[in-house]
Image 1 (tube, rainbow, N blue to C red):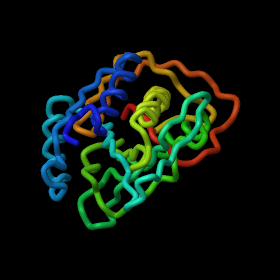
Image 2 (tube, rainbow, N blue to C red):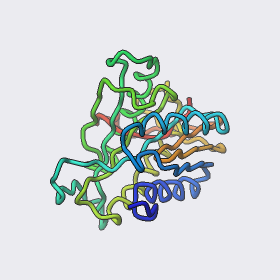
Image 3 (spheres, rainbow, N blue to C red):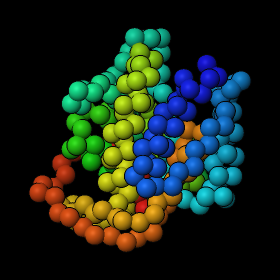
Image 4 (cartoon, one colour):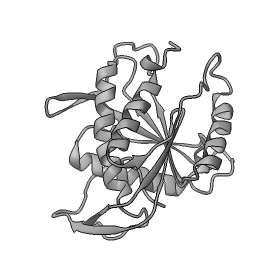
Length: 231
């Protein structure tokens, strides 16, 4: 459908609203990039990202997708969190393996791992194992640029909207700490104005540092996550 109320752009709106509620500044660009044709969508979205970054410089870029698994229309990866049923999420990280210029891919990967570690501790099962591929996916434009796949063809809109609530909470925690951080026993909470830009299916975030720390009881053991962070 071209009705943005029933596409992944609606999920971007939901994530934006949660982040705004936490005091973040968010720019959500809902430009069509895969209509009327999917071919060339990454080239078109590249221009959107560049334009948005000129207006709102940032290192954090989130590209929200709905995962599609062939013809399995009833495939609905989900997880129960309390009384909620949420669509599962998955990171897709591009590398320079395809030969394209991509100096930031390891930073992007570290960012995703930190977020997924937090998610695995807070909401086990929310994230599926991440995928790392030799494509670039325009992620060379940021130091915390990721694709997040939300659910699949069988998940309901309500389940996917619920996922945005929990994703926002994880992003708040991760963006509260330096990406270069610190001690694995320590998470930090930063009381500062944060700026996000959501580009089509992309979110971008920046903020300044003014931090206090609190110590968690246990070292994080989980692997693979996503979150918004300061760079």
